[in-house]
Length: 607
Image 1 (cartoon, rainbow, N blue to C red):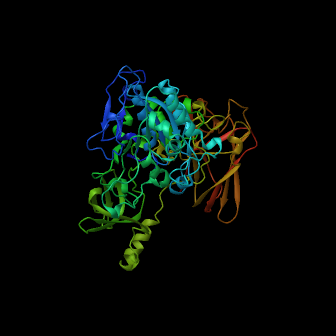
Image 2: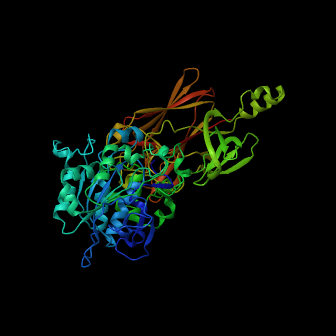
Image 3: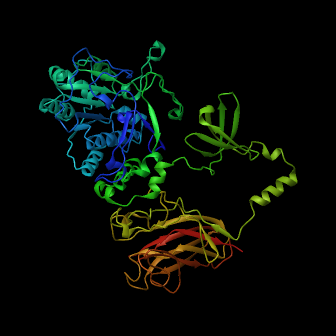
Protein backbone atom coordinates (compact mmCIF):
# COMPACT_ATOMS: atom_id res chain seq x y z
CA UNK A 1 0.00 0.00 0.00
CA UNK A 2 2.88 2.34 0.66
CA UNK A 3 2.25 5.94 1.51
CA UNK A 4 -1.47 6.54 1.18
CA UNK A 5 -3.05 9.65 2.62
CA UNK A 6 -5.45 7.41 4.50
CA UNK A 7 -3.51 5.01 6.67
CA UNK A 8 -4.94 1.55 7.10
CA UNK A 9 -4.78 0.75 10.79
CA UNK A 10 -5.18 -2.96 11.33
CA UNK A 11 -2.64 -3.26 14.08
CA UNK A 12 -2.09 -1.93 17.52
CA UNK A 13 -3.18 1.50 16.40
CA UNK A 14 -6.54 0.73 17.94
CA UNK A 15 -4.99 3.12 20.44
CA UNK A 16 -3.31 5.89 18.46
CA UNK A 17 -1.69 7.74 21.28
CA UNK A 18 0.66 10.37 19.98
CA UNK A 19 2.54 11.37 23.09
CA UNK A 20 3.84 14.80 23.99
CA UNK A 21 7.30 13.86 22.76
CA UNK A 22 5.84 12.94 19.38
CA UNK A 23 3.61 15.95 18.89
CA UNK A 24 5.87 18.80 19.79
CA UNK A 25 9.32 18.07 21.13
CA UNK A 26 11.01 14.77 21.98
CA UNK A 27 12.07 16.41 25.24
CA UNK A 28 8.52 16.98 26.37
CA UNK A 29 5.71 19.49 26.45
CA UNK A 30 2.44 19.40 24.54
CA UNK A 31 -0.99 17.86 24.52
CA UNK A 32 -1.53 14.12 24.26
CA UNK A 33 -3.72 13.01 21.36
CA UNK A 34 -5.53 9.74 21.91
CA UNK A 35 -8.02 7.74 19.88
CA UNK A 36 -9.20 4.39 21.21
CA UNK A 37 -11.51 1.54 20.36
CA UNK A 38 -12.54 -1.42 22.48
CA UNK A 39 -9.94 -4.07 23.19
CA UNK A 40 -6.29 -3.11 23.25
CA UNK A 41 -4.60 -1.21 26.03
CA UNK A 42 -7.40 0.64 27.77
CA UNK A 43 -7.36 -1.98 30.51
CA UNK A 44 -4.75 -4.58 29.72
CA UNK A 45 -5.55 -7.82 31.44
CA UNK A 46 -9.01 -6.70 32.48
CA UNK A 47 -12.26 -7.96 31.04
CA UNK A 48 -13.91 -5.32 28.86
CA UNK A 49 -17.58 -5.05 28.14
CA UNK A 50 -18.18 -4.89 24.42
CA UNK A 51 -14.65 -5.86 23.40
CA UNK A 52 -14.46 -7.40 19.96
CA UNK A 53 -13.34 -10.75 21.26
CA UNK A 54 -12.43 -11.61 24.86
CA UNK A 55 -11.84 -15.34 24.97
CA UNK A 56 -9.66 -15.42 28.08
CA UNK A 57 -10.00 -18.65 30.07
CA UNK A 58 -11.71 -18.33 33.41
CA UNK A 59 -9.10 -17.37 35.97
CA UNK A 60 -8.41 -14.59 38.39
CA UNK A 61 -7.24 -11.41 36.65
CA UNK A 62 -3.67 -10.50 37.55
CA UNK A 63 -3.57 -6.83 38.42
CA UNK A 64 -0.57 -4.61 37.95
CA UNK A 65 1.55 -3.94 41.01
CA UNK A 66 0.43 -0.51 42.23
CA UNK A 67 3.99 0.32 43.25
CA UNK A 68 5.26 -0.01 39.68
CA UNK A 69 5.69 3.19 37.71
CA UNK A 70 7.00 1.94 34.37
CA UNK A 71 3.71 0.68 32.95
CA UNK A 72 2.47 -2.73 32.00
CA UNK A 73 5.23 -5.01 30.64
CA UNK A 74 4.71 -5.56 26.92
CA UNK A 75 6.16 -7.62 24.07
CA UNK A 76 5.20 -6.34 20.61
CA UNK A 77 5.07 -8.74 17.63
CA UNK A 78 4.74 -7.09 14.22
CA UNK A 79 4.97 -7.70 10.48
CA UNK A 80 6.91 -4.51 9.80
CA UNK A 81 9.07 -4.33 6.68
CA UNK A 82 11.20 -1.75 4.87
CA UNK A 83 10.09 -0.76 2.32
CA UNK A 84 6.69 -1.33 3.94
CA UNK A 85 3.99 -3.72 2.85
CA UNK A 86 1.59 -1.17 4.30
CA UNK A 87 2.09 1.91 6.48
CA UNK A 88 0.16 0.91 9.59
CA UNK A 89 3.00 -1.06 11.20
CA UNK A 90 5.27 2.00 11.42
CA UNK A 91 2.49 3.90 13.17
CA UNK A 92 1.91 0.89 15.44
CA UNK A 93 5.57 0.78 16.44
CA UNK A 94 5.68 4.53 17.10
CA UNK A 95 2.53 4.16 19.20
CA UNK A 96 3.96 1.56 21.56
CA UNK A 97 7.06 3.73 22.01
CA UNK A 98 4.77 6.68 22.75
CA UNK A 99 2.88 4.63 25.32
CA UNK A 100 6.21 3.61 26.83
CA UNK A 101 7.28 7.25 27.12
CA UNK A 102 4.00 8.03 28.87
CA UNK A 103 4.64 5.26 31.37
CA UNK A 104 1.59 3.28 30.27
CA UNK A 105 3.56 0.29 29.02
CA UNK A 106 7.02 -1.05 29.72
CA UNK A 107 8.18 -2.16 26.29
CA UNK A 108 10.36 -5.20 27.00
CA UNK A 109 10.99 -6.49 23.47
CA UNK A 110 9.96 -6.57 19.81
CA UNK A 111 9.68 -9.61 17.56
CA UNK A 112 9.78 -9.08 13.80
CA UNK A 113 7.89 -11.31 11.42
CA UNK A 114 10.15 -13.00 8.91
CA UNK A 115 9.31 -11.84 5.37
CA UNK A 116 7.34 -14.89 4.23
CA UNK A 117 6.90 -15.70 0.51
CA UNK A 118 3.24 -14.69 0.80
CA UNK A 119 4.31 -11.18 1.77
CA UNK A 120 6.33 -10.83 -1.44
CA UNK A 121 3.52 -12.31 -3.52
CA UNK A 122 0.93 -9.86 -2.20
CA UNK A 123 3.26 -6.86 -1.74
CA UNK A 124 6.14 -7.13 -4.26
CA UNK A 125 7.67 -3.86 -3.03
CA UNK A 126 8.01 -5.06 0.56
CA UNK A 127 11.54 -5.42 1.89
CA UNK A 128 12.98 -7.35 4.80
CA UNK A 129 12.11 -6.70 8.42
CA UNK A 130 12.47 -3.04 9.39
CA UNK A 131 15.10 -3.48 12.08
CA UNK A 132 16.19 0.09 11.41
CA UNK A 133 12.84 1.43 12.64
CA UNK A 134 13.51 0.04 16.12
CA UNK A 135 17.01 1.51 16.07
CA UNK A 136 15.56 4.90 15.09
CA UNK A 137 12.91 4.89 17.82
CA UNK A 138 15.39 3.62 20.42
CA UNK A 139 17.60 6.55 19.53
CA UNK A 140 14.79 9.13 19.62
CA UNK A 141 13.48 7.91 22.97
CA UNK A 142 16.78 7.02 24.62
CA UNK A 143 15.54 3.46 25.05
CA UNK A 144 17.32 0.15 24.53
CA UNK A 145 14.45 -2.15 23.60
CA UNK A 146 15.78 -5.50 22.32
CA UNK A 147 14.45 -6.99 19.09
CA UNK A 148 14.67 -10.40 17.43
CA UNK A 149 13.76 -12.00 14.12
CA UNK A 150 10.86 -14.42 14.00
CA UNK A 151 10.79 -17.89 12.51
CA UNK A 152 10.90 -18.34 8.75
CA UNK A 153 8.86 -21.55 9.05
CA UNK A 154 5.13 -21.99 9.43
CA UNK A 155 3.64 -24.31 12.01
CA UNK A 156 2.97 -27.86 10.86
CA UNK A 157 0.28 -28.35 13.53
CA UNK A 158 -1.33 -26.32 16.30
CA UNK A 159 0.98 -28.02 18.81
CA UNK A 160 4.17 -27.56 16.77
CA UNK A 161 7.05 -26.03 18.76
CA UNK A 162 9.73 -26.30 16.03
CA UNK A 163 12.16 -27.58 18.66
CA UNK A 164 14.44 -28.84 15.89
CA UNK A 165 14.64 -25.47 14.14
CA UNK A 166 18.03 -23.77 13.75
CA UNK A 167 18.83 -21.01 16.23
CA UNK A 168 18.17 -18.31 13.64
CA UNK A 169 14.54 -19.46 13.54
CA UNK A 170 14.31 -19.56 17.34
CA UNK A 171 15.50 -16.02 18.04
CA UNK A 172 12.01 -14.54 18.36
CA UNK A 173 10.75 -17.43 20.48
CA UNK A 174 13.80 -17.30 22.74
CA UNK A 175 13.39 -13.55 23.27
CA UNK A 176 9.75 -14.00 24.29
CA UNK A 177 10.61 -16.80 26.72
CA UNK A 178 13.59 -14.91 28.16
CA UNK A 179 11.45 -11.84 28.87
CA UNK A 180 8.75 -13.94 30.52
CA UNK A 181 11.24 -15.81 32.71
CA UNK A 182 13.04 -12.68 33.86
CA UNK A 183 9.95 -10.58 34.53
CA UNK A 184 8.82 -10.15 38.12
CA UNK A 185 5.25 -9.57 36.93
CA UNK A 186 3.09 -10.93 34.12
CA UNK A 187 3.80 -9.61 30.62
CA UNK A 188 1.26 -8.70 27.93
CA UNK A 189 1.91 -9.62 24.28
CA UNK A 190 0.47 -7.70 21.34
CA UNK A 191 0.30 -9.44 17.96
CA UNK A 192 -0.30 -7.24 14.92
CA UNK A 193 1.28 -9.56 12.36
CA UNK A 194 1.45 -13.33 12.15
CA UNK A 195 0.90 -15.48 15.24
CA UNK A 196 3.85 -17.76 14.50
CA UNK A 197 6.30 -16.84 17.25
CA UNK A 198 3.72 -16.46 20.02
CA UNK A 199 2.25 -19.86 19.16
CA UNK A 200 5.71 -21.46 19.06
CA UNK A 201 6.70 -19.90 22.39
CA UNK A 202 3.50 -21.07 24.07
CA UNK A 203 3.89 -24.58 22.67
CA UNK A 204 7.52 -24.64 23.87
CA UNK A 205 6.82 -23.51 27.45
CA UNK A 206 3.09 -23.70 28.26
CA UNK A 207 3.63 -23.56 32.03
CA UNK A 208 5.67 -20.38 31.71
CA UNK A 209 2.91 -18.80 29.62
CA UNK A 210 0.31 -19.87 32.14
CA UNK A 211 2.27 -18.23 34.95
CA UNK A 212 3.85 -15.18 33.33
CA UNK A 213 1.77 -14.14 30.30
CA UNK A 214 -0.72 -11.52 31.38
CA UNK A 215 -2.65 -11.79 28.10
CA UNK A 216 -2.18 -12.03 24.36
CA UNK A 217 -3.87 -9.32 22.30
CA UNK A 218 -4.47 -10.84 18.87
CA UNK A 219 -5.39 -8.29 16.22
CA UNK A 220 -6.24 -10.50 13.25
CA UNK A 221 -9.02 -12.41 11.60
CA UNK A 222 -12.67 -11.88 10.79
CA UNK A 223 -15.25 -11.87 13.54
CA UNK A 224 -18.76 -12.90 12.59
CA UNK A 225 -21.68 -15.06 13.61
CA UNK A 226 -22.53 -15.68 9.96
CA UNK A 227 -21.25 -19.11 8.84
CA UNK A 228 -20.95 -17.92 5.22
CA UNK A 229 -18.44 -15.24 6.24
CA UNK A 230 -16.20 -17.44 8.36
CA UNK A 231 -14.12 -18.57 5.38
CA UNK A 232 -12.88 -15.03 4.87
CA UNK A 233 -9.31 -14.90 6.17
CA UNK A 234 -7.67 -11.55 6.72
CA UNK A 235 -4.03 -11.00 5.77
CA UNK A 236 -2.55 -11.65 9.22
CA UNK A 237 -4.36 -14.98 9.43
CA UNK A 238 -3.18 -16.06 5.99
CA UNK A 239 0.44 -15.52 7.08
CA UNK A 240 -0.03 -18.75 9.07
CA UNK A 241 -3.58 -19.91 9.70
CA UNK A 242 -2.35 -22.87 11.79
CA UNK A 243 -0.54 -20.53 14.19
CA UNK A 244 -3.67 -18.37 14.35
CA UNK A 245 -5.78 -21.38 15.34
CA UNK A 246 -3.17 -22.37 17.92
CA UNK A 247 -3.68 -19.06 19.72
CA UNK A 248 -7.19 -20.12 20.72
CA UNK A 249 -5.64 -22.86 22.85
CA UNK A 250 -3.13 -20.64 24.63
CA UNK A 251 -2.65 -21.38 28.36
CA UNK A 252 -3.18 -17.68 29.12
CA UNK A 253 -5.88 -15.04 28.57
CA UNK A 254 -6.48 -14.20 24.92
CA UNK A 255 -8.14 -11.00 23.80
CA UNK A 256 -9.13 -11.58 20.20
CA UNK A 257 -9.68 -8.33 18.33
CA UNK A 258 -10.78 -9.27 14.79
CA UNK A 259 -10.09 -6.85 11.98
CA UNK A 260 -13.16 -7.27 9.79
CA UNK A 261 -16.52 -8.92 9.73
CA UNK A 262 -16.27 -9.39 5.98
CA UNK A 263 -12.96 -9.14 4.14
CA UNK A 264 -13.38 -6.43 1.47
CA UNK A 265 -12.07 -6.69 -2.08
CA UNK A 266 -11.11 -4.39 -4.93
CA UNK A 267 -8.31 -1.83 -5.32
CA UNK A 268 -10.06 0.82 -3.21
CA UNK A 269 -11.48 -1.45 -0.52
CA UNK A 270 -9.98 0.63 2.29
CA UNK A 271 -12.20 3.56 1.31
CA UNK A 272 -15.39 1.53 1.37
CA UNK A 273 -15.03 -1.02 4.14
CA UNK A 274 -17.77 -0.94 6.74
CA UNK A 275 -16.63 -2.02 10.18
CA UNK A 276 -19.53 -3.69 11.91
CA UNK A 277 -19.94 -5.12 15.39
CA UNK A 278 -17.15 -7.69 15.13
CA UNK A 279 -14.26 -5.70 13.73
CA UNK A 280 -11.64 -3.16 14.76
CA UNK A 281 -10.41 -1.94 11.37
CA UNK A 282 -10.24 1.81 11.07
CA UNK A 283 -8.29 4.45 9.22
CA UNK A 284 -7.18 8.03 9.65
CA UNK A 285 -5.74 10.70 7.39
CA UNK A 286 -2.00 11.09 7.85
CA UNK A 287 -2.28 14.82 7.18
CA UNK A 288 -4.25 15.08 10.42
CA UNK A 289 -1.22 13.94 12.42
CA UNK A 290 2.07 14.08 10.51
CA UNK A 291 2.38 17.89 10.20
CA UNK A 292 2.15 18.21 13.99
CA UNK A 293 4.96 15.80 14.81
CA UNK A 294 8.45 16.91 15.71
CA UNK A 295 10.89 17.03 12.74
CA UNK A 296 12.73 13.85 13.82
CA UNK A 297 9.42 11.97 13.95
CA UNK A 298 8.38 13.33 10.56
CA UNK A 299 11.70 12.07 9.20
CA UNK A 300 11.05 8.67 10.80
CA UNK A 301 7.87 8.31 8.74
CA UNK A 302 9.39 9.85 5.60
CA UNK A 303 12.28 7.38 5.81
CA UNK A 304 9.77 4.52 6.00
CA UNK A 305 7.11 5.57 3.52
CA UNK A 306 9.34 7.06 0.81
CA UNK A 307 11.20 3.73 0.45
CA UNK A 308 14.38 5.54 1.46
CA UNK A 309 17.39 3.27 0.89
CA UNK A 310 20.06 5.41 2.50
CA UNK A 311 22.00 3.49 5.18
CA UNK A 312 22.32 6.74 7.12
CA UNK A 313 19.16 6.14 9.14
CA UNK A 314 20.43 8.21 12.07
CA UNK A 315 21.54 11.21 10.02
CA UNK A 316 18.23 11.03 8.16
CA UNK A 317 16.38 11.62 11.44
CA UNK A 318 18.57 14.61 12.23
CA UNK A 319 18.28 16.28 8.82
CA UNK A 320 15.79 18.85 7.64
CA UNK A 321 12.32 17.56 6.77
CA UNK A 322 12.03 17.02 3.01
CA UNK A 323 8.91 18.98 2.14
CA UNK A 324 8.45 17.28 -1.23
CA UNK A 325 8.55 13.79 0.24
CA UNK A 326 6.24 14.85 3.05
CA UNK A 327 3.77 16.16 0.48
CA UNK A 328 3.93 12.87 -1.41
CA UNK A 329 3.02 11.03 1.78
CA UNK A 330 0.29 13.44 2.86
CA UNK A 331 -1.35 13.90 -0.54
CA UNK A 332 -0.37 11.20 -3.03
CA UNK A 333 -3.72 11.49 -4.89
CA UNK A 334 -3.17 14.90 -6.38
CA UNK A 335 -4.52 16.10 -9.74
CA UNK A 336 -3.93 13.65 -12.59
CA UNK A 337 -5.12 15.86 -15.43
CA UNK A 338 -2.51 14.42 -17.79
CA UNK A 339 -4.10 10.99 -17.54
CA UNK A 340 -6.33 10.55 -20.58
CA UNK A 341 -7.44 7.00 -19.95
CA UNK A 342 -11.16 6.36 -19.80
CA UNK A 343 -12.72 5.71 -16.40
CA UNK A 344 -16.22 4.38 -15.83
CA UNK A 345 -18.15 4.70 -12.58
CA UNK A 346 -21.18 2.69 -11.57
CA UNK A 347 -22.99 4.42 -8.72
CA UNK A 348 -25.05 2.75 -6.03
CA UNK A 349 -28.12 4.09 -7.86
CA UNK A 350 -27.04 2.23 -11.05
CA UNK A 351 -26.01 5.41 -12.86
CA UNK A 352 -23.01 5.08 -15.21
CA UNK A 353 -20.56 7.95 -15.71
CA UNK A 354 -17.52 7.89 -18.01
CA UNK A 355 -14.68 10.30 -18.55
CA UNK A 356 -11.16 11.35 -17.70
CA UNK A 357 -10.16 11.15 -14.06
CA UNK A 358 -9.46 14.83 -13.39
CA UNK A 359 -8.81 14.57 -9.68
CA UNK A 360 -9.38 12.37 -6.66
CA UNK A 361 -9.33 12.76 -2.92
CA UNK A 362 -9.89 10.49 0.03
CA UNK A 363 -13.64 11.08 -0.17
CA UNK A 364 -14.48 11.81 -3.82
CA UNK A 365 -13.41 11.66 -7.46
CA UNK A 366 -14.03 14.03 -10.36
CA UNK A 367 -14.56 12.94 -13.96
CA UNK A 368 -14.49 15.11 -17.08
CA UNK A 369 -16.64 13.69 -19.89
CA UNK A 370 -16.21 14.10 -23.65
CA UNK A 371 -18.27 17.30 -23.56
CA UNK A 372 -15.93 18.87 -21.04
CA UNK A 373 -18.49 18.68 -18.24
CA UNK A 374 -17.23 17.82 -14.76
CA UNK A 375 -18.92 15.26 -12.54
CA UNK A 376 -18.00 14.94 -8.87
CA UNK A 377 -18.84 11.61 -7.25
CA UNK A 378 -18.55 10.80 -3.56
CA UNK A 379 -16.71 7.55 -2.94
CA UNK A 380 -19.55 6.40 -0.71
CA UNK A 381 -21.80 6.58 -3.80
CA UNK A 382 -19.51 4.45 -6.00
CA UNK A 383 -20.44 0.81 -6.49
CA UNK A 384 -17.65 0.14 -8.99
CA UNK A 385 -14.79 2.13 -10.55
CA UNK A 386 -13.19 0.73 -13.72
CA UNK A 387 -10.13 2.04 -15.55
CA UNK A 388 -9.81 1.33 -19.28
CA UNK A 389 -6.62 1.44 -21.35
CA UNK A 390 -8.62 3.18 -24.10
CA UNK A 391 -8.21 6.89 -24.70
CA UNK A 392 -10.96 9.33 -23.86
CA UNK A 393 -11.02 10.28 -27.57
CA UNK A 394 -14.04 8.43 -29.02
CA UNK A 395 -13.38 5.77 -31.64
CA UNK A 396 -14.49 6.73 -35.15
CA UNK A 397 -14.34 10.41 -34.25
CA UNK A 398 -12.96 11.25 -37.70
CA UNK A 399 -16.17 9.87 -39.25
CA UNK A 400 -18.37 12.14 -37.15
CA UNK A 401 -17.02 15.47 -38.47
CA UNK A 402 -16.97 17.07 -41.91
CA UNK A 403 -13.86 16.96 -44.10
CA UNK A 404 -13.14 20.68 -43.71
CA UNK A 405 -13.53 20.37 -39.93
CA UNK A 406 -11.03 17.52 -39.89
CA UNK A 407 -8.57 19.62 -41.93
CA UNK A 408 -8.95 22.50 -39.46
CA UNK A 409 -8.41 20.13 -36.53
CA UNK A 410 -5.24 18.64 -38.02
CA UNK A 411 -3.94 22.11 -38.84
CA UNK A 412 -4.47 23.16 -35.23
CA UNK A 413 -2.81 20.05 -33.83
CA UNK A 414 0.23 20.41 -36.07
CA UNK A 415 0.62 24.17 -35.69
CA UNK A 416 4.18 25.00 -34.70
CA UNK A 417 5.11 27.36 -31.95
CA UNK A 418 8.34 29.30 -31.94
CA UNK A 419 9.73 27.31 -29.01
CA UNK A 420 9.72 23.56 -28.50
CA UNK A 421 10.93 22.20 -25.11
CA UNK A 422 12.69 18.90 -25.71
CA UNK A 423 11.68 15.90 -23.56
CA UNK A 424 14.49 14.98 -21.17
CA UNK A 425 12.55 12.60 -18.94
CA UNK A 426 13.86 9.46 -20.65
CA UNK A 427 17.37 10.88 -20.99
CA UNK A 428 17.82 12.15 -17.42
CA UNK A 429 20.58 10.36 -15.53
CA UNK A 430 20.68 11.99 -12.07
CA UNK A 431 18.45 13.31 -9.30
CA UNK A 432 19.88 16.70 -8.38
CA UNK A 433 18.13 16.81 -4.99
CA UNK A 434 20.49 14.18 -3.63
CA UNK A 435 24.26 14.02 -3.56
CA UNK A 436 25.49 13.45 -7.11
CA UNK A 437 29.12 12.56 -6.51
CA UNK A 438 30.29 11.00 -3.22
CA UNK A 439 27.42 10.92 -0.73
CA UNK A 440 23.68 10.92 -1.44
CA UNK A 441 23.06 12.94 1.73
CA UNK A 442 25.75 15.56 1.11
CA UNK A 443 23.87 18.84 0.67
CA UNK A 444 26.80 20.60 -1.01
CA UNK A 445 26.58 18.04 -3.84
CA UNK A 446 22.91 18.81 -4.49
CA UNK A 447 21.16 21.30 -6.75
CA UNK A 448 17.71 22.06 -5.32
CA UNK A 449 15.49 24.67 -6.92
CA UNK A 450 12.77 26.35 -4.83
CA UNK A 451 10.29 25.73 -7.65
CA UNK A 452 10.27 23.11 -10.41
CA UNK A 453 7.65 24.94 -12.47
CA UNK A 454 8.56 26.02 -16.03
CA UNK A 455 11.10 28.84 -16.12
CA UNK A 456 11.45 31.67 -18.64
CA UNK A 457 14.96 32.99 -19.23
CA UNK A 458 15.30 35.99 -21.55
CA UNK A 459 11.94 35.15 -23.11
CA UNK A 460 12.80 31.50 -23.70
CA UNK A 461 10.66 28.88 -21.89
CA UNK A 462 12.34 25.95 -20.17
CA UNK A 463 10.40 22.98 -18.85
CA UNK A 464 11.99 21.40 -15.78
CA UNK A 465 11.45 17.89 -14.48
CA UNK A 466 10.09 17.75 -10.94
CA UNK A 467 12.29 15.24 -9.04
CA UNK A 468 9.38 14.58 -6.64
CA UNK A 469 11.66 14.64 -3.67
CA UNK A 470 14.40 12.20 -4.58
CA UNK A 471 12.41 9.80 -6.72
CA UNK A 472 12.63 11.03 -10.31
CA UNK A 473 15.81 11.70 -12.34
CA UNK A 474 15.54 15.34 -13.39
CA UNK A 475 18.81 16.25 -15.14
CA UNK A 476 21.41 14.93 -17.55
CA UNK A 477 24.87 14.49 -16.11
CA UNK A 478 27.57 12.69 -18.04
CA UNK A 479 30.47 10.50 -16.97
CA UNK A 480 33.29 11.93 -14.89
CA UNK A 481 36.32 10.22 -13.29
CA UNK A 482 35.75 11.41 -9.71
CA UNK A 483 33.35 10.42 -6.95
CA UNK A 484 31.28 7.30 -6.31
CA UNK A 485 28.44 7.88 -8.78
CA UNK A 486 29.74 10.00 -11.68
CA UNK A 487 32.04 7.24 -13.04
CA UNK A 488 28.94 5.06 -13.50
CA UNK A 489 27.13 7.57 -15.71
CA UNK A 490 26.98 7.25 -19.52
CA UNK A 491 29.47 9.07 -21.71
CA UNK A 492 26.79 10.01 -24.24
CA UNK A 493 23.02 10.41 -24.29
CA UNK A 494 20.53 11.13 -27.12
CA UNK A 495 17.45 13.36 -27.10
CA UNK A 496 14.83 13.13 -29.90
CA UNK A 497 14.06 16.38 -31.77
CA UNK A 498 12.24 15.83 -35.10
CA UNK A 499 12.18 19.54 -35.91
CA UNK A 500 14.07 22.28 -37.64
CA UNK A 501 15.80 24.76 -35.36
CA UNK A 502 17.66 28.02 -35.52
CA UNK A 503 19.02 27.46 -32.00
CA UNK A 504 19.07 25.01 -29.12
CA UNK A 505 18.95 26.79 -25.78
CA UNK A 506 20.39 25.03 -22.73
CA UNK A 507 19.50 25.61 -19.08
CA UNK A 508 22.54 24.22 -17.32
CA UNK A 509 25.84 25.66 -18.40
CA UNK A 510 27.41 24.21 -15.26
CA UNK A 511 29.35 21.15 -14.18
CA UNK A 512 30.79 19.33 -11.23
CA UNK A 513 34.49 20.11 -10.72
CA UNK A 514 34.18 22.82 -13.36
CA UNK A 515 36.04 26.11 -13.67
CA UNK A 516 37.51 27.56 -11.43
CA UNK A 517 37.81 24.24 -9.53
CA UNK A 518 39.59 22.90 -12.61
CA UNK A 519 41.64 24.45 -15.38
CA UNK A 520 40.16 26.64 -18.10
CA UNK A 521 40.05 25.73 -21.79
CA UNK A 522 39.30 22.00 -21.77
CA UNK A 523 36.36 20.41 -23.61
CA UNK A 524 33.64 19.53 -21.11
CA UNK A 525 30.67 18.71 -23.37
CA UNK A 526 30.13 18.09 -27.08
CA UNK A 527 26.70 18.83 -28.58
CA UNK A 528 26.39 16.61 -31.66
CA UNK A 529 23.49 17.55 -33.96
CA UNK A 530 22.17 14.64 -36.06
CA UNK A 531 20.15 15.78 -39.07
CA UNK A 532 17.34 13.71 -40.56
CA UNK A 533 19.37 13.25 -43.79
CA UNK A 534 22.16 11.48 -41.89
CA UNK A 535 24.59 14.38 -41.69
CA UNK A 536 25.89 15.60 -38.32
CA UNK A 537 27.91 18.43 -36.80
CA UNK A 538 29.58 19.04 -33.46
CA UNK A 539 29.72 22.02 -31.12
CA UNK A 540 32.27 21.95 -28.28
CA UNK A 541 31.38 23.54 -24.94
CA UNK A 542 34.53 24.64 -23.15
CA UNK A 543 35.21 24.60 -19.42
CA UNK A 544 35.70 28.19 -18.27
CA UNK A 545 34.24 29.60 -21.50
CA UNK A 546 30.75 28.07 -21.78
CA UNK A 547 30.56 26.11 -18.52
CA UNK A 548 31.44 26.89 -14.89
CA UNK A 549 31.25 25.00 -11.61
CA UNK A 550 27.70 24.86 -10.23
CA UNK A 551 28.66 25.35 -6.58
CA UNK A 552 29.67 29.03 -6.88
CA UNK A 553 28.80 32.20 -8.82
CA UNK A 554 31.50 32.24 -11.46
CA UNK A 555 30.89 34.13 -14.70
CA UNK A 556 32.23 32.85 -18.02
CA UNK A 557 32.16 34.56 -21.40
CA UNK A 558 29.84 32.35 -23.48
CA UNK A 559 26.97 31.74 -21.01
CA UNK A 560 24.82 33.89 -18.74
CA UNK A 561 23.70 33.49 -15.14
CA UNK A 562 20.11 32.21 -15.26
CA UNK A 563 19.14 31.17 -11.73
CA UNK A 564 20.82 31.71 -8.37
CA UNK A 565 20.18 29.03 -5.74
CA UNK A 566 21.89 30.20 -2.59
CA UNK A 567 25.57 30.16 -3.43
CA UNK A 568 24.95 27.88 -6.41
CA UNK A 569 24.06 28.70 -10.01
CA UNK A 570 22.44 27.59 -13.25
CA UNK A 571 23.54 29.21 -16.50
CA UNK A 572 21.99 29.78 -19.90
CA UNK A 573 23.69 29.25 -23.28
CA UNK A 574 22.74 28.61 -26.90
CA UNK A 575 24.02 26.36 -29.69
CA UNK A 576 23.22 27.42 -33.29
CA UNK A 577 22.96 24.71 -35.98
CA UNK A 578 24.84 25.46 -39.20
CA UNK A 579 22.01 24.11 -41.37
CA UNK A 580 18.26 24.67 -41.65
CA UNK A 581 17.53 20.99 -42.35
CA UNK A 582 15.32 19.00 -39.95
CA UNK A 583 17.15 17.69 -36.90
CA UNK A 584 16.50 14.07 -35.95
CA UNK A 585 18.17 14.14 -32.53
CA UNK A 586 20.70 15.80 -30.29
CA UNK A 587 23.52 13.75 -28.83
CA UNK A 588 25.30 15.02 -25.74
CA UNK A 589 28.81 13.55 -25.57
CA UNK A 590 31.22 13.85 -22.67
CA UNK A 591 34.39 15.75 -23.56
CA UNK A 592 37.86 14.44 -22.62
CA UNK A 593 38.35 16.57 -19.48
CA UNK A 594 37.53 15.59 -15.89
CA UNK A 595 34.40 17.71 -15.36
CA UNK A 596 30.81 16.42 -15.01
CA UNK A 597 28.55 18.59 -17.25
CA UNK A 598 24.98 19.12 -16.07
CA UNK A 599 21.89 19.97 -18.19
CA UNK A 600 18.42 20.55 -16.71
CA UNK A 601 16.43 21.64 -19.78
CA UNK A 602 16.79 22.19 -23.54
CA UNK A 603 14.46 24.24 -25.75
CA UNK A 604 14.56 24.34 -29.55
CA UNK A 605 13.86 27.70 -31.20
CA UNK A 606 12.23 27.63 -34.64
CA UNK A 607 11.56 30.21 -37.32
